[in-house]
Length: 377
Ligand SMILES: Nc1ncnc2c1ncn2[C@@H]1O[C@H](COP(=O)(O)OP(=O)(O)O)[C@@H](O)[C@H]1O
Ligand SMILES: [Mg+2]
Image (tube, rainbow, N blue to C red; front, side, top):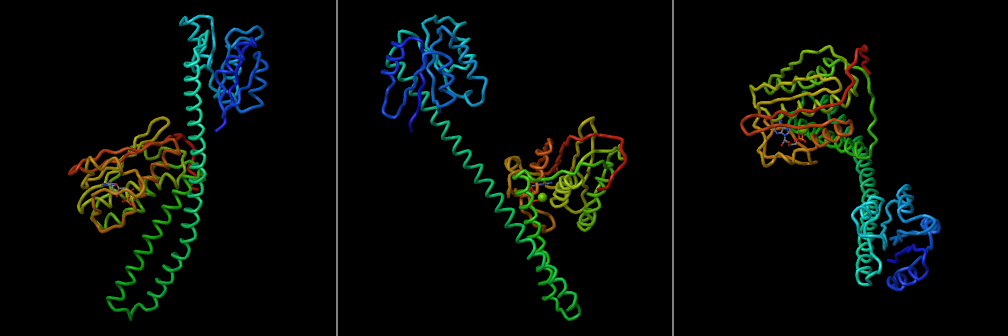
């Protein structure tokens, strides 16, 4: 790869000797006899490295470096100061603080000059390569999200149709179905629903990753938000003989938040607690209100997650050796979605868990605690 090196010095003989020292087939050496000329060249050409004389009449090297630092286009060009002034610490620091990466002292040592220039050019090239690959990865990730979203969306409708048709057929045949046929219909229903859940999760991931999640922030009471979640989980809990317990004092407190996202986060934690808890146990939901933040804890009396498996629970498709207690299905996507949703809202999630002692999942979300009347949007 060709690199452009700019050398700046007010003395023609210095420019000449540096040019001879640094010339190589894959390099172009550009020369400037002063600061202004150097700045003009830098704006016109892609420069990989500048060797900058410190003492120059119209504008010294420090001033040139400061100007280069002040615009984003030139800020990242490495500068080596070439100086005869002094090796004093104070001078060195001034140069390094004004954006220089290194110093060379006159009279120049050919070998050292070449070695320093080669190293910096190599770092520059590696950095350019990293940036190129990073841009490529970002574009590929965007494409992946697009396909993921499109595939999940286009699969969702036919599966929804299959489920509706199967349920219509079942109702029509109701009396005439034998036990085996009923089991088949039941399996059709539950596998279809599992697929819908998986597709919804994939759609969520694609939306969150592409940054297209819309937020609809309105004012709601804490009570109504918690009741949404308890209402939708109570039936499943009582089927498993699990008690849902909610303890919070400030139930009438008003929060400004996106209702759908808040309940999606809480639902995931509560449904996990139910999914991994034994019959006869209690799932406790509690809330703490701070001025700008709400923290919710969901505690269960389930098996608890082994220590060496805890690090992976927030990774997509990650499951642990903890088994669901009622044969529920598991995609391993719920907590990764919750974590991303919270982080995109400035919140966070954490948990404590130990085998035999249950798990306690908590999340904090910045919210505006207000006095406005509720708007159930
Ligand atoms: N309350 C809990 N108790 C025990 N294990 C849990 C609990 N919540 C989550 N886990 C573990 O973390 C994994 C990831 O959870 P999640 O992403 O919600 O996926 P899923 O619910 O589909 O299994 C689960 O598969 C389970 O192994
Ligand atoms: Mg889950």
